Image 1 (cartoon, one colour):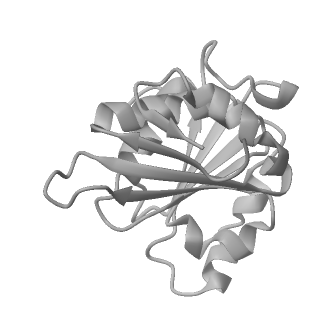
Image 2: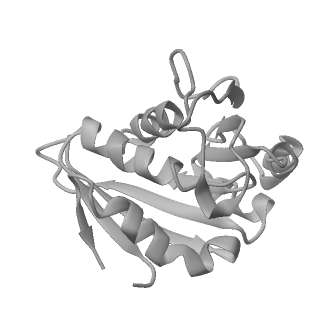
Length: 180
């Protein structure tokens, strides 16, 4: 199929469902970069992603904490790419960082150990610090009059380069519409 995979969602619940479907194919060491303006749906995406990995309790944007780590529980805790289960979700929000040096100091690449996956809000600010292995998800409002509709454009780099078909298959049964 190739990149990008483009999805349109009509509600926060649909955005969470897309995130859940992506979480289920993630493997330890994967990095997901969420890109989009304020209100684009990054936190709703993070909530759906975390729920699919079995994270218990509320998931909020770590704007002031910058990085939160969540234990993943249950059968939904990652089965992607034939690797072991995802045991930890690293959820970061780098909006308040001022320089790439501050992002590097967060040691996000090091936190994504053998059993963790990283989900980074404002990921475009962190991309240079993480190297070439990332799934970029750009969220935009599809209609400024209806703030519930989103377009998600998904592209992979590095270890994600050859996984576009896997991503498209994971998303195809979603209530959202998949566009090649």
